Image 1 (cartoon, rainbow, N blue to C red):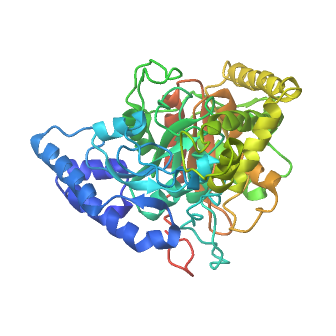
Image 2: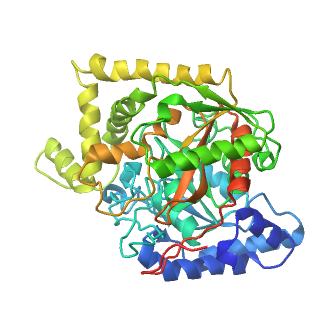
Length: 497
């Protein structure tokens, strides 16, 4: 079935002329037409003639022997990346009619590599959330179902929930995501796919609508670890338009998968062994440790003593940067405009109409911690703690090659659960935030199902700019787990193989 292929399989099939890029793209479009009304994974689907024209161009390049790295591969693009001539909303009323006159660097790189864009995937508004329920265009539904409660609609994780749901359900072979505190890895774990947050600076941020500039990083969401490497290779690269983008060569990341991991040292952080961690998550973690032992890895206990401050530090720094970045949406220069008798009134009316409750909450928190009298007590102190968190990782990596942890503290929950408690919602990112604060690469790999038939993921964290080792370990876990389950998107049916 063409909608169930990995990028690697599809690339091989196109090269062997087993099917055409047009046939591959048409299969995805048909799946989107059938299933997107149920899942709401896409905000904007590109016109069929546009998609098929891009696929035909890819077929011509295959025929000429000039196909690129991603040629003819149909993917979704998170609606946070500006796409020239295609509406880009950030899932907000503030930008509901914004059509960029330029292309983000990441999407430009993918187009240059021959990727075929299917449309723009849904997300939490301005990437703020962990369940994809804050979108102005409605929540995204996970394609997975609890086998004992198939009537419950599960969240796909966030903020890249539209991308994770689309990839899991066969509405695209892969998708782009962005990760600020876990927004690639956590939805990947919830939907049983692979999600990679690269090192901060590996991919350009230019043309990506900003949430928290010192944390935001683009990355791939795919069906296999090799696919994540392949897609990252196309996405990454130096960009002079982004002062934080690293001028480093881009390795052939996908070739790291399948390499022997014998002799690599895998660190197990003591602080991640929370007494409140569900037994099924602990069991999956222990299974992952056992698999890596069998593969020849050495398991080492390590300490990240400032991990316990990661979440609180994040929820000072990220809202502060959010407050600064979103100040541009004032009804004068960017976004919608609501008229009022005074300038202050225009600002107030525009932001009240344009921003949802979660975005307003984070702007208010950020403005507070940056205000006179509180900057030193909160923001400056948080930056100092962030330095300590980063130092913890650096010291741990003096003794180990990677770290292994759970990706999330639970499997996906249902829409309506936990949502009245913002602290509980923020705790969904407790295992992913520290790596974001440190700027190190981290990968979520699906490794099995819990007792309700829902996927669980393990997280591999690596050294700065060492995505290759992260992918090698992730590939070893993937091979040992043999996770091939695909969800059912039919109402009333449980997840199945």
